[in-house]
Amino acid sequence: MSVTLTKTSKNTPLLIHNSYSYTIDRKTVTKILWKCEYSRKYSCHGRLHTTSNYELIKIVGEHENHVGNSRCAATRKYFEKLKQESEQNHTTPHNILTQVNIGVPDEVRVQLPTNYNLKRNVRRWRQVTTTAPTPTTIDFPAIPTKYHQTTRNTIFFRKDTGSDNIHKILALAFIETTIVANAFELLCTNLDDNYQQILDYIEGNYIGRRRGRIRRQASYPIDFWGMMERVKNNMHRSNNNVEGWYRE
Image (cartoon, rainbow, N blue to C red):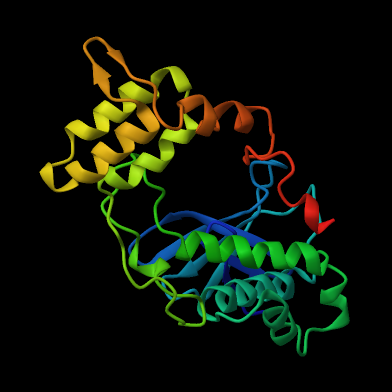
């Protein structure tokens, strides 16, 4: 009986022969030695030797403590095809399932998870292959290019305003009110004179200008626009408690 080559969930080679699955144990110059995928879980001694081109040479040992699965090869092939389509096809998970399920025998279908879980797999595989690395600092240089368009190649992000500190001023509303002034001063030290006019405006209206060692009252005090406590308490971020009331 011939062997079937597929891959594990970790994308490593998996050989299927006579309803049993094998993973690579070790390699030599001329052949590959395979061990039962349950060699550790069930202490199975089933082994198999192939050439470097995956042609069967001989079977060694017996699968004494577990039975094979006649549907194993077809099921694994199904998941391999589903993963491949998920990574290469940008259509919806529902459409991918519809396409992959064409011609799948009923005995394989009964072995599969629900469509909901299969769609979750599609989304997870896509995330692994398409998601850019998560920034580790707030000073990442730019929005990754792959996020400039949708999966349907429609451009929706046309200009990156950059990571200058001037864009971080809005974040002052989400830190402790007692350190807002210090945080504002820290941002100011990292901006050049080109931003002085807007910094003066923000300081006068929202922070309070310095007068000696203290600051004057701002036109809009920090306690008025600070959102830290509201976010912590899962409250509305609007200061207007009746906002939208007239729409009721």
